[in-house]
Image (cartoon, rainbow, N blue to C red; front, side, top):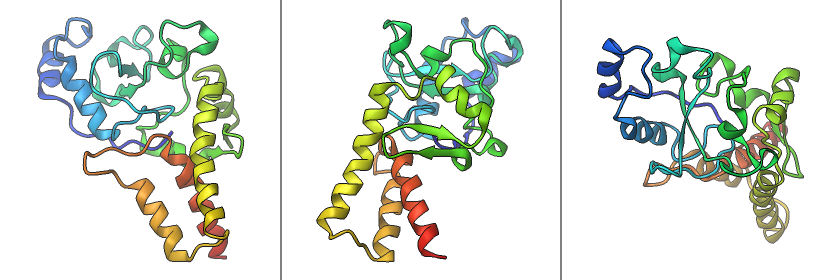
Length: 214
């Protein structure tokens, strides 16, 4: 999970909300929302960081504050995020992200600056994601199921690729090389996309740089 900077909402959403402030289902230009969410999230899920595309069947429009519990926020763009399909159609234990979350509450929103999810998240060697915030740490599992085996393995594969590169390079890199890795994983490619599960590498490289600067 990474911090998300929200951009401007689609003009069609602004116009529709002016006369239909709660009618999300009646709003017809959801493609515009999908395109906007994909762009500001650089092509990765707001929660697990898997790849998402703007097509139906690849992205879900997530209401961070639930659709049923917060009718006044149904069409508020700051409440909308782009999530992966999260195992939709599978059994509950094999779902994750928005599909698993449903109408449950989540204490931190990656698109709210003051929540700063990146500060409180940790990525462990075995692929688990944890948080220094007790409630958020519990919700990573009970609300989002982000430690589903598939997601753990995906994060571990990304981290293992960094470890393999380090072994090939003899276990040591110059400071400038660590900084280049960080730049490669924090920056979007020519299509504006970030690499899936990018914050696993970002977390570990920042951790190394912080240690080496002491």
